[in-house]
Length: 259
Ligand code: PGA
Image (cartoon, rainbow, N blue to C red; front, side, top):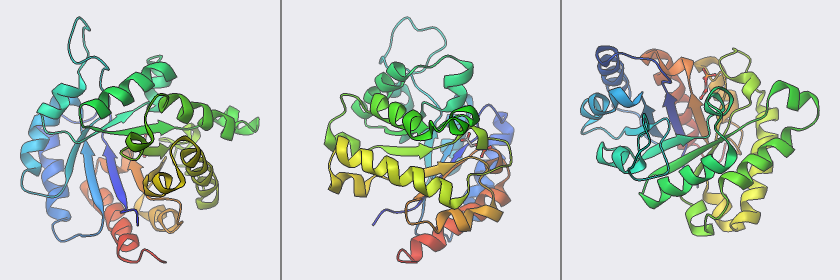
């Protein structure tokens, strides 16, 4: 059974002081919550402070990006090895904001996925179509291309150590989430591809998260879908109360896996 997972993507938000407070509030708010894996991904600058705030709790630390080389002349970049040193266990890769605004291409995402795996980080590979692609009937083509490219050259075994996030671009930060049926359809398609790229057994173990305007109000109906294994949360992760609310919905799903 896949354990539900909720990942907070703080994006470029949070001074050190704000990050410390938010991480501590989330930690305290989830002290008694079981059955769900939680990871906070603050900006690079706040990783060490959030690691301190989370010490001794079950909440994991993650980053929002990494470079594929371990070190070198790559001004402004941070390597997977550096993230591991800070205590990260996961890294978000191929987020649509990086693809759109920073020109990140599939082959770079693939190098990052492989570097993350090499250094023992869990890659959280993001895929998702734009509104235009959806309107043209290209949703499956788009996510298939991103998934195949992102996982190119990754062994079936290593695919089993990855997590996938389906994040339709039109749902990110817009307040308009994909319906449970829309998300579920794409998740099922992605799982089918994972079966082909790895094996049916491996594909059954890979968690596929949904991201895009997840809020406490829509989390339960999304997470009720058997194909939706958790959430990647942006805006609603910046307030402890709303993020904790979402995690608690996922914990209910974790406690009732057959529902
Ligand atoms: P959102 O962002 O929850 O603010 O829509 C999700 C994401 O970009 O990961």
